[in-house]
Image (cartoon, rainbow, N blue to C red; front, side, top):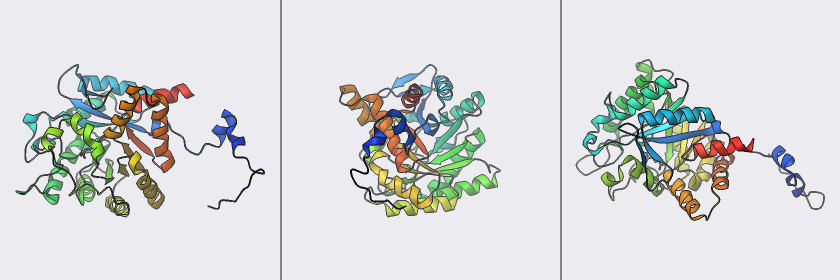
Length: 336
Ligand code: PBG
């Protein structure tokens, strides 16, 4: 692209900004409810709407409540959810066996949503952190090191179970090497040729995930431990391109950059380099910071929600995972 040098007064950039109609005509990025995916926290029980203190206005929902929410999302034009189960302590173990239990909470949630709303999209998280007693995304050796290939064997079982339940996309968020290829192969072998993979490709070892770990109830299990031996170093971007390249080659249908706003540079490079369907996740910590400021009246809620989501579109995102999805979709409706 060539940028032609222009000068004042021949060029006055403010002319196109003067009126709403011309601002609209020159607008380069657009945000729509169709771009949004709502991450949802699912809990056992009936009629449960349990608040999450570090994520104001977000709740853990029992499956019956989740179905009510999905009806609302559908009416708002939001295409999909990303469910995360809140697993009770008695179901957590060193081998994460509940991750592939046919009657587990996540499989029940997928089946219920797909039965009631067959056309509504599900991106189901594939990772072991809700299921391990230590809160890591994989099984560990005697020194606590997260084992790559034994973890993949469990992820395959989990992914196949979700495919059988009717999930549209599995979303491996564990950052083990080679898991996209292994899951794709298993899907092909078992006839799930149309079940997609949304790969958390450039997933950083970020402290912005804190409130999420409260929400799924893994903070206490993880304690002071970190995920530095498998999630990416926040200092790196070239490495993110390699991660994305590998996941595309291994059969991913979407790649993701996560977190969102602190990693817009990574998102932009990924989209420019690969021109591939690219997702971004406005994570729990980003949400919590904004909600804290809203609660104090320090930032304008409606404006900040739309501005922060538009930033992802400008940087190249095709799809945005955001806890603000409902609020954003309602605001976008009002704008019409
Ligand atoms: C688990 C997972 C995490 C998130 C999505 N899937 C947390 C983690 O890796 O510790 C974070 C989402 C958020 O913070 O909103 N594999």
